[in-house]
Image: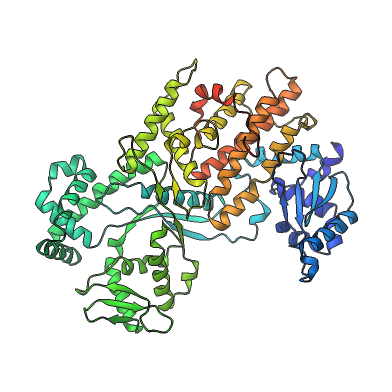
Amino acid sequence: MREFSGILRGGGEALSKALLIFLVFVLRCGLSKVLDLPPENLIKSISAVPVSKKRRVADFQLSIASVTEDSSSDCLAPGLHLQAQKLAERLKCDAVVSEISAGPGTVNFTINRELLAKTVLQQVLKDGSEYGVKSELFSTVPKQKAVIEFSSPNIAKKFHIGHLRSTIVGNFIANLKVALGHEVIRMNYLGDWGMQFGLLGVGFQLFGNKEKLKTSPLQHLFEVYVQINKAAEDENTKKLAKDFFRKLEEHDEQTLSLWKQFRDFSIDEYIRIYKRLGVHFDEYSGESFYQEKSKEVLKMLENKGLLQKTIKGTGIVDLSEKKDLSSFSTVMRSDGTSLYITRQVSPSVFIAIYFASKSQSNHFQHLFQILKLMGYDWVERCQHVSFGLVQGMKTRRGEVIFLEDVLNEVRSRMLQNMASAKTTKEIEDPMETAEKVGLAALIIQDFQGLLSSDYQFSWDRALQSRGDTGVFLQYTHARLHSLEQMHGNEQLTHINVACLQEPDAISVLQHLLRYDEVLYRSSQDLQPKHIVSYLLTLSHLAAVAHKTLPVKGSTPELAQARLCLFQAARSVLANGMKLLGAVCNVKVTSFSKRIFSKIVYCPVCHC
């Protein structure tokens, strides 16, 4: 290893992938010279090769199409393959690159196995929670201030299951952006204003109970809302609701006091639920905060000639290209009171990313168009991340349930699973363990597909300890953590990497090499599924390696090397799960051993 020591010195803050790229293409200069391109131009054209069930794969591949400017027939598949072959023939192996080969439009590079092991393990254990986020891939991405608005329930209503997706997706994106060095403000923009509070206020005056409001606020307000909705079509009820909301906008003291109670009690309940989800907010804002500014918005629209009045007296903005009202947005009621979209124009100055269901896509399209017509160039930075519906989320009795019911149900089922597992040890704090493992199960099932897609929820599939589930990720992390505890639980710095040349060890190392690319991809399209897929594969690879590369009973030198490998895998697994919002719980160790030891999946097809 002496010949590599000089190369490895001065790696500085670069990560494993970037360091290896520069080792290969800067220090040795072969590829950069042949292509006549500066090394920095090659970084995004080179990617780590996914682990294959064929086992023996290269470490990096260069895409020929991404470095050629030729638009001729040579850019077709046969031409690219020929270019790849010619380029591979011109490059020479050395102490860093042990093999160079041509693939379909790619040139593949295999790194010296000892160098691969040393570099990857050193970097993972050195960088810890920052592994992957300091990659050269992010070097050109400017650090920004991002206000992320998510969850956004309507006050005085219990969380329904639709809020789960907005909450956990928004939390994931906020976590990712913070990890990448951006300044993030997590905003909960509450639905705390509007005509529905006129109806609820009238309902509380008729059916409300102050004692019930104090002891069980959201449940009682939900019951009141159900009762008043039965009379919602009654003309007298409609008039009373309009009068109540008008008083609210006029800041009538008694009306405002009742509304404030609704809001304060609601936020207290929401904070309790968010704590169970492991979610926090930097700011609780809402429509009420901007209701006064909505009058300024209407005045601005009028001054710019954008506000038009209909025969019924409502205010609209023409969004059609031909200005023929084929597309318009209503921004004011006939009585002059504001609408939801009007109250959203003001906070949009600060918000970069909105998380809401795809059913609201038309609403956000209108909002962004209005902002553009008003001359706000920053609207280009605004983004609506849409998500689909969760189907099949019901109790055993077949009833649609609220979010807290879902959390209670998943905790209850996990407790049953834990009680039925044959283990010789008592589980420390089973309620907390069941809560965290169950939450991971919900998050991972939700994040496995495209966010914009609807998906069918399955209790049985989500809570399986085997297969691609959050429970399996928790078990894997707990088992690897237990392995470290049994062998000293200390970070290893000096190991013999020659002991890590088995195919199963190389597969884990190659997969660890790809982590920065996965983070980069998720940061670009804001889809958590890339990280979920990566972590599941990592867990399967770790399970196989755990079975074939035992620590116990091996020589001290071999045991230390293998323990270091498992330590690195656990560290990256924990980092990824933390980004997803599924915090690892090491207390599942006591009942994971029996299940984990039986997992012998193929690391690619999981058969």
